[in-house]
Amino acid sequence: MTLDDLRDQLCDLFKNQFPDAEFSISERRSVILEIRIFFAPEVFMESYFNAITGKKSFTLVENGRRIWGYDNYRYWHYHPTEDPESHVPCNEPSLKEIVDEVQTVLTRIKRR
Image 1: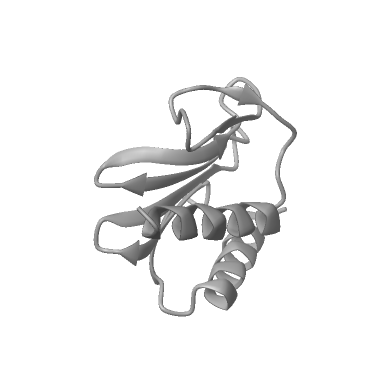
Image 2: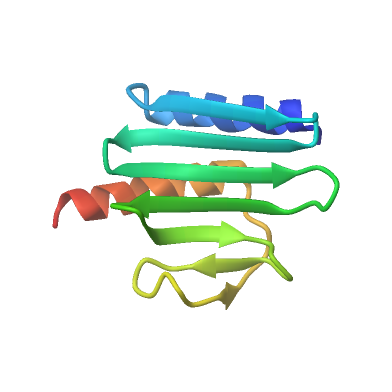
């Protein structure tokens, strides 16, 4: 999958489930893609893709701190909301799974 494909698929999925979200997209040297998706002033998701290294990360941030995420630094792992600093091994999630989990986490934090 190319960076363009990843960008288009991820943005389309988020636009469908979060029509009011705002996007900030940065592409460097046709190798690195960073996307921030803002849900509220203090809540956003940062996605990072590096076509050379294959590194991918998806991090939900609230008030400057990670509250949930997935990445493949060394191996695919998950950062659960209960303990976002932990690394729980997992298989690579689909982009749809990521978007669905973001929706679940955002619903949970709205109830706090």
